Amino acid sequence: MIIDFHTHMFPDKIAKGTLDYLEGICNTRPFTDGTYAGLASSTAEAGIDLSVALPAVTKVSQVDSINRFAAQYQEGPIISFGGIHPECGNYKEILRHVKDLGMKGIKLHPDYQDMYFNDIRYKRLVAYASELDLIITVHAGVDPKSPNDVHCTTQMILELVREVQPGKLVLAHLGANQLWDEVEAYLVGLDVYFDTAVVLDQMPKEQFIRIVRAHGADKILFATDSPWAGQKEFVQILSDMPLTQEEKELIFAKNACRLLGMEG
Picture 1 (tube, rainbow, N blue to C red):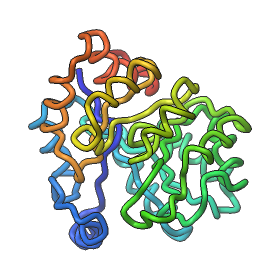
Picture 2: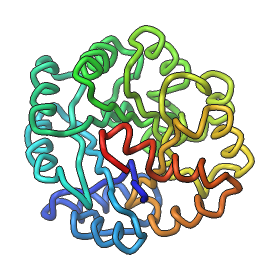
Picture 3: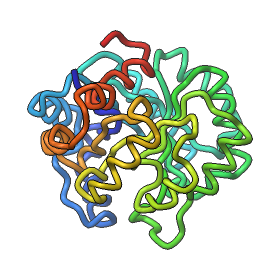
Picture 4: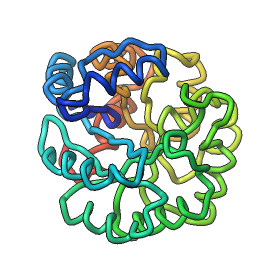
C-alpha cells in the first residue's frame, strides 16, 4: 500500500490559472493539470492507493469556498484536508466545522499566509486543532515565494512545539525545506512527523537516510507535493533507497494509516 500525504488540486475553473501563477513563482513545470481528475490519474498511474490533498488558504475570504470544495473529497483515491487562515477570528468554529465535515486535518502555509509560525495566532490555532485531534500539516522551511524571508524556521517550530505540544503535527519537506542541517540539529527526535514532499530528488541521499534513522522511520511520511513533483518518479526514488523493507512500509503507508485512523 502507498499513501501520498502531500498533494494539491484545485477546482476545474481555476486550476489552469492557479498553476500558471504558481509555475511562475516556483519556476517548475507541473506534473498534472491541477484538477481532481489530473491528480486521480497520476495517483493511479503511480500505483498509489490514496493521495491526500492539502489546500492552502491565502485569504480569510477563501476559507468557506475552499472547505466546501474539500468536503466533496473524503473517500479514495483522493481525500482532502480542510483549510484555515490564522487571521480568522472564529478559528474555533471553523476547525469544529472541518471536523464535523469528516476531514482528518488542515494545511497551514506561513509564507502564503504572510505570518511567522511562532505567532500567537498560529499557536492558538494549532492548540485547538490538536484538542480536536486534527492533523496539522505545515509548510516548513524555504519557499520560492519568499526565499529570503522564511516564515517557518526550525527555531519557530521548536518554540511552537515546546509551548503547544501538538498531537499530530506534520512538518512538510522533511522538517524544513533546504534547512536540513538545522533539522538534524534541532528537530530530529521531536514528537512530530516529517513528510518527503518535493525533497527526495533534491537533498543528498546520505542526509535523507541519516534523518530517517535518527528521527525514526515511524515518523516519516511519503509525500510528493504533486503537481510539483512526479508521483510515479517519487515512488521509484523511495523504493530504490537503501532502507529496510520495514522502514519503507512504514514510510509508504503504515505511518499515514495510523495518523488517518485507517487500516493498512
